[in-house]
Image 1 (spheres, rainbow, N blue to C red):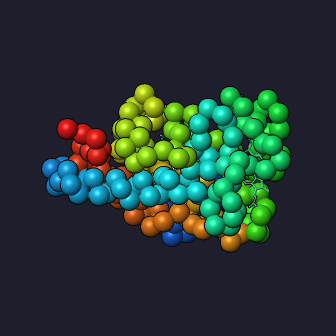
Image 2 (image 1 turned 135 degrees about the vertical axis):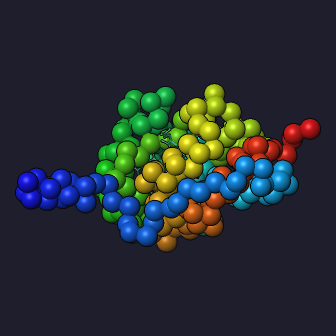
Image 3 (image 1 turned 60 degrees about the vertical axis):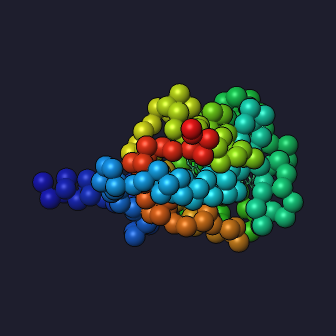
Length: 204
Ligand code: HEC
Ligand code: HEC
């Protein structure tokens, strides 16, 4: 029995590691406690994150081209080496993303090396196109279940915590600029926006 327990424990401990202290709590504010105005400011902070290079470089549109942008890249341009993700969004049609972005926890974090996480590296779904999009556009996409993977704000928040790519975005290494605020603050902002009723600036 002892053996089985330690074997199970070993497996649990070996599970994709989110470093200690990085887990976030998901505590939505009480219903009715967030005004529309507060919800809108929470969304503007969500947008600062979504439009940041650590997020938007992968959240690109139907040309299926990952982007290289942000201070560590100098000029904004499509991914070098003519990398195109294809409709598969993983490069199945040409060169797989995993050729360089191998499934490898927290490794390869030197300057200009291909980031690696313990998760499949691939473009976000085309519906979640954020690169170059305005706050109103991202706001309407994120509250639309048809275009956000069918998630409500609680599900968006827990997706944010469980996604190792996001933990990477706040701790990217290699001289890359981390996404603004913190993962916890970002989750709190998503929750506040949701509780406020998902206001967007173009609402009547
Ligand atoms: C390496 C590429 C990559 C990066 C970088 C990335 N994402 Fe994503 N994102 C994805 C993929 C792939 C999915 C689809 C996963 C799924 O639906 O389970 C996704 C889905 C999402 C979703 C689900 C909702 C929707 O509209 O589809 C949210 C929210 C999200 N990402 C937020 C972020 C934020 C915030 C950042 C930056 C802090 C970020 N992502 C950076 C690849 C990326
Ligand atoms: C031949 C190797 C190679 C392949 C294949 C490759 N990448 Fe990359 N990728 C890199 C390197 C190297 C960097 C970092 C360049 C730098 O920092 O100057 C990078 C960076 C990125 C970034 C920017 C991350 C950031 O800093 O915000 C994204 C997004 C990205 N790759 C997506 C993809 C996707 C999606 C695929 C598959 C369609 C892919 N890559 C295939 C080598 C590769």
